[in-house]
Length: 83
Length: 441
Image (cartoon, rainbow over all chains, first blue to last red; front, side, top):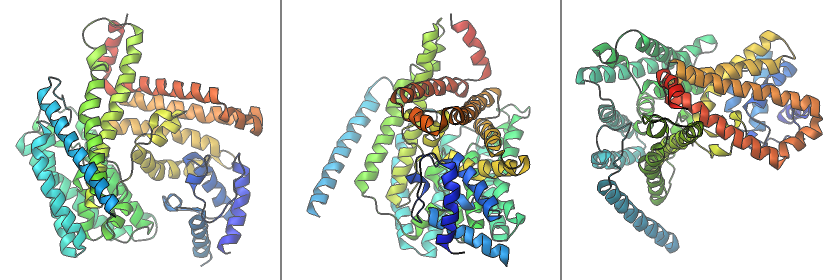
């Protein structure tokens, strides 16, 4: 799965969780969305983990700067699971 | 170009005049600072500090291994001087403490080198080790030794709280491959980077590392202004406002009304902000002169509309660290344990635990635990309150509720008062809080 496909799947999660509609782009970061705080982050991470069936390591997701990097991280997790 | 130069010069001249006026005020006036951190007048360390800044700046700009090593040595010297200045412990206890700090940092470097790069759970060892050391030290200091005995003086390792968190954050970032494995001199100079030793911020190693590779160039006048602002907040404003806080007003031996409790609490809240953020301003300004970027620790906390929001703007680096190291893993683990659909409860429970930990980190006594409970309780309640509002109001009405100016104003005021009152438990030991009943009529 490439980055844009992953972001497309992530969009479904964001649509469910956020009050205001959020359009995901690779450059979007938590700072740009008012509702996206550390509590929301947990809901997102838990939803992403169950949707893609992966597990992140401690601090991995928090280290990503924007949606693009987050999607790349998901891609890496998927790749390491497949191998 | 010339305009910049003129502007810089004007700023510098203004700054020098400001310093002169400040110094004159400081030496002439009778409200000589009653300072919590420095034993003596802090001004005699200024020449030493300047020497450190010049040498460290040269060492960093050289960008060689030798430069890095000298930077590490400079920081060690700075730390040794600082700890001698700050702790009033007897000589032998202080030297033991300093040796212990160095041993802990060296051991941590060894563990990072050995385990942080490996896959699997073993990489957690260097992340957890500093925290365990911190817990052991705190527990030992709880044991019956009086603080005045030698063992009590040795174990009172005040720098460890921040040092432990920074070291474990470093190990976390190395494990997650955010930064390459540090060389010893880098690790050592980060651990003992002496401006951030006393009270943080818990600035990330990745930022420090990037600054060393590519020192930021902040105009000198900007850094100096930042330091001046910090000095004014720390030595001047905070001490003025502190004269009407708990010790100055409420516990002055006279009876007081309930209204004075609010005055004292608010004054203490302001005092703490000025004192703490002032110190951080100084730290960020000093580091800026060296070209090292340090994370901001405060962002207008008085605007917060709920306690959770307060912690997003107050002591930011502490909340960020605990978010990454405790909140995220624990809530995920709980969410997994409680089963799908229970994410919100997992978050609620974890929030409470995190704030309890924040309370206990400040000190292992009943008043700090109560401080943690007050904040944890408020954040958890607020979490469930928001969930309930969303459920009963529906999304549209909830949005309108959040946007409502009046509700915003009320919430901000209530948060401000609640946080102020909570600092009652932060500032005073339990015995003192007990005497409140007699003081307030």
